[in-house]
Length: 80
Image (tube, rainbow, N blue to C red):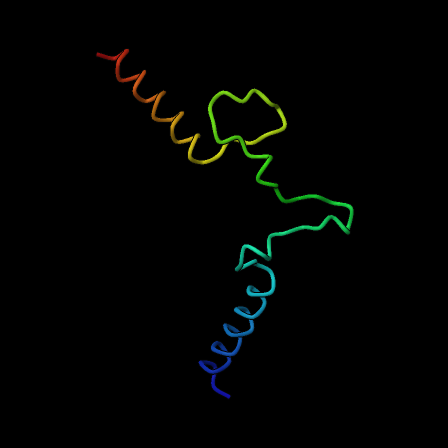
């Protein structure tokens, strides 16, 4: 077998390993907790506003961008 064929075979094997390790569908991201862990976020754990003061929730990307934009606007105003 040529070294080029060896490389192609190894690349295919690596692709198969990656497919096993990385979730490709939203349904693959669910965790029923049977193993005692809850490593995935439930939608109720995501704060999609800028007023929630819970220390156990994470900020949504949409609201993170809104906050970044507000800070950028404030800095631009101060530097006028």
